[in-house]
Length: 197
Image: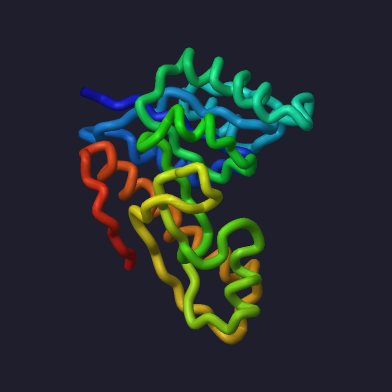
């Protein structure tokens, strides 16, 4: 049976595109919805061009009321009936109640080697700390920010010449490899962590 995958984005949607393109042929999943909290998110047009249904729940009118914002998102998600949710650059913190509803069925990609550098500015923080390597992590979403079981990681050396921007640019292609690989494995019932390269 094919699993339905909803992808949540806030920006350009490059990881969404990588995920959606991977869900073809004998892949166990298919994208059923791309949902954004930003009407101007560039990924919405990309999803529409790929024939994927899209929806927007603008977070700004809900300022100060996360429960109402999430209730509006749930309306869209319930209509799409996803088996799994993939957060792909979705820049809103989700409440414990929302996460519990999809417990074990929500993935996220984070631009650091978790458990290091949860939250924002991960590349700048890795460089400032003098780390030898950085990377990205796909993990199961839990109520704690950027926490939850690690399902896959990709590691990239930090060069002496790196800026946060150059490091981010070198890590991004690994994100586009790792996330689809982990998604496919999870939909096939495999949750043992994997490593790239």
